[in-house]
Amino acid sequence: NGMTDMLEIQHVGDGTAVATEWIAAQNGYTQGPSTVLGKWVAGTLYQFGQTSAGTGNALIEIQNVNGQTVATRWVVGATGLTQEDQTTLGRWSANNSFQYGDVTGTGELDLMEVSTTGTESVMVTRWVAGSTGAGFTQGASLSLADPEGGNGGFISPIALQDVGGTGHLSLVIPWTYSTSYYSFDQVSVSSTGALAAVNSGLTGLKSTSATINTVYAQFSLSNDPNTAGKGMGIVYENTSGTVSFEALIPSTGAMISVSLGAPKLNQQFLAGDATGVGSSDLVQIWENAQGQAVASVWYSNAQGSAYTQGVDSVLGAWQQGATYQLANANSDGRAAIVATSIAANGSLTISTWNSTGSGFSQNGNWSADTQTVMGNFTGNGMTDMLEIQHVGDGTAVA
Image (cartoon, rainbow, N blue to C red; front, top):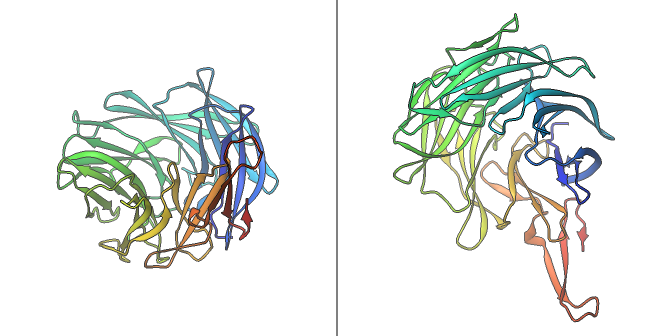
C-alpha cells in the first residue's frame, strides 16, 4: 500500500525470539500478529530481501548456532511468519557481513557474504537460493584487496543497490583509510553466475578535504540525475573536529561535500526522501542542552548536486536508547522519522513525525504526551508509578 511497515524481533522472558508485525497506518502503527522464531541468539542478523524496486515480505535470519553460520528463510504474511528452510553456511565469524537480495534481476533472492581474509583483503561469496525447502547452495567467489594498497581496510556496512539504474543489484564494499581517502569496490553477478568487479559507477579512490578520523554513517542515496541508479553517502569527522557529508553520483563520478559543523551529542545520521521529489536528503538526530531530541535536515536539490540546510525540528524529550529510521509511514511519498523505544513497562513505543517538506511534525504518539502519577497503590508503604501514554491508535493507555 506504499507505507513502510516494521517487524520487531524481541528477546522475551522464556529465552525465545518473538517477531511482531507493526502495520503502518495514517495515524501511526497498529500491532499485528506475533511469531515465535525459536531460541534467542545474541548477534543474530535479520534482513528483508531487497530488489531494485525495494523490499518485499521475504526475511533472512543469520545466526551463530554452535559455532556454525545458519541462514533461515522466512516469509512474512497476514497471520505471521512461516519458516521456509535452513542452511548451514560454514564456520561462524562475527566479522562476516551479509546482504540478501536479487543480484541477477530474475526475482530470486540470493545471499551475498563478505568475509575478511586479511587486514586488507576480503572474499565475496554468493549463496544461490533454491526453491522453498531447498535452502542455499554455494556459488561463485571473488577475492578482493584494498584498492589503495596498504593504507586502510574493509569496513561495514556493505550494501546491495542498483548503481546503474538497470534493475540489477550490485554489492558495494566500502574501504576507509587513515588518510584523506575512501573508496568503494562494486561486485556484480554475470549471466553465467560468475562474480566480477565493476570498474565504473561508484568504484575508485575518493579524496576528501581533510584526514578522516571517525566514520559515522554510510548509506545508499537516490541522487543520480541521469539514471535511476543509486549513489553512496558517507558521514565522517575529520582530525580537526568537523563533521562532513559527502555524496557520490555514480553516472558522473561527481562528489558533493557538505560541512555539518561540530559533532552533536548522541548524534545519529539517516538518509531518505523527506520532500517526495525522488532525491535523498540527510537527517541528523541529536540531543540538545535542554535534553530534547532535535532533527536537523539538509535537503538535496533535484540534481543531487547541492544540499541546503533546513530548519531544526524539536521532536520531544530525548529517549535514551531510542532507534530512529526514515520511512514512508503514511503513503504521502515523504520519508517520516520513525522512532522505537522501550516504555517504562517494557513495551515497545513507536513514534512518528511526518515530513512537511521543510521540517517534521509530530504525529501525536511521542513521550511529549506521556504523563506519570505517583502513589502507593498497593498499601505496602512504597511509592508506585502510573504511566499514561498516548499511543499510535489515538487512545490513552495506563
